[in-house]
Length: 266
Image (cartoon, rainbow, N blue to C red; front, side):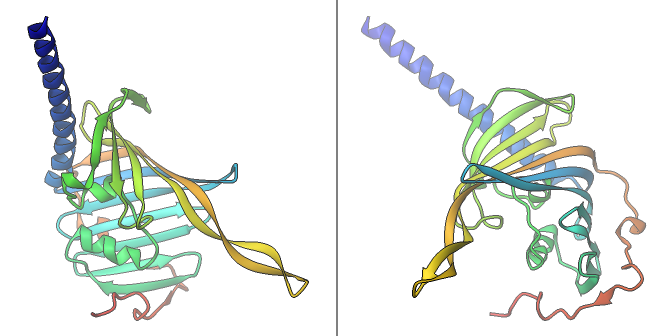
């Protein structure tokens, strides 16, 4: 009986180890696939939802991206709240235009997509656990407690699902996101990603009294946030030309100085 118990325990440990190895291999394969891509284009639908005190709010936008290593990239972001944002690097210089303000900025071309991402943070544009993030070649260690979820269909594509946790460096610093990755079983690329945060404080105005009179004070409330990226169209290693990374702001746009957006020197 003791021998049977030991054998059963060893079999369970072996199965658990094999399962963990399989999950890690799947993640490593995904990371390598994006790391090896020399060019990439996609259209993604992004939905942002925030839940606070039982009430939901949110917005959606569409992102068209074209990328060619090492530093040619075009991002077109459109949505009812953001308006149109164009961020284009032709490998020599970078231009960012925002239709809501009618302003545009010129910056030196970032040396890589990772540096491009840092520059975009200056304009409040970020991404994590999505294609934009994976093209930056993040280490596998960025994802913790990786486990397998139930297979799913995304727009008709059969997908393997991975669940993980990832400390956020850009979206919500100091918080760990719950991440859900949907990997196309045919192409191996992402079809969808979900990034969820719980208990994030948000500043709110609170009605109060000051010396017996009605007043407004600043308070905080905890919110849950979910960002869903759904890939509508993708093309890995497409043939891209200089025309794909050429952009001029519309007539009437005003150039803004760079001082506000350039990273501060240490």
